[in-house]
Image (cartoon, rainbow over the protein chains, first blue to last red):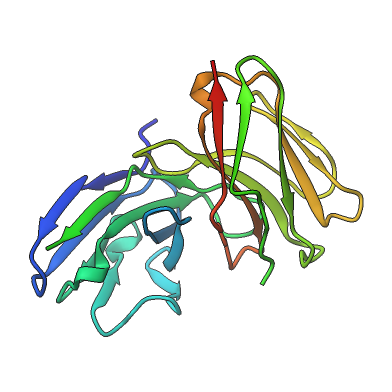
Length: 115
Length: 108
């Protein structure tokens, strides 16, 4: 079974440019998460989807970040415009269902460098 | 917030058992304790989880204190491939707080 797929794996852009990350969760997984991971820190949740609905986006900086999950499968996270401080790894994860019992499956992440 | 506290780093000799501690004194009765690990340049990988009873799987064992305020991840025989950052998480279902984890070094 294929795991969580993310692309691109690496992205280098100049500040003020837009950037987008794509995630394909494990087939059948209704819950999808986007995390941000700074160097030396653990992942921090940006947004959680149940099917196509964003049920927790309280930590998403909405002035420059946006996300969508059309049809409740693939998801895209966008930053416009990017700032130097956005350099980090962006992780996507999915789980079969919400709730504290269910494990999350993570993709390899997209490493963003903003120059 | 049901946050967790872990030592920043630990070392173990290869083929010896490793006990990774975690404190979660503010955990609620319905929070599950999850452990994940992250190898360099990879996303976190699920290791084990439990609620009240000790749990075993092919990767590790999880020992949960009777008052649930702490837990210990046990790797029975550390290998070089176990060198990673280990995260202990109190999963409320709505919040999944990773913290900074414990960086495990395995010495050959």
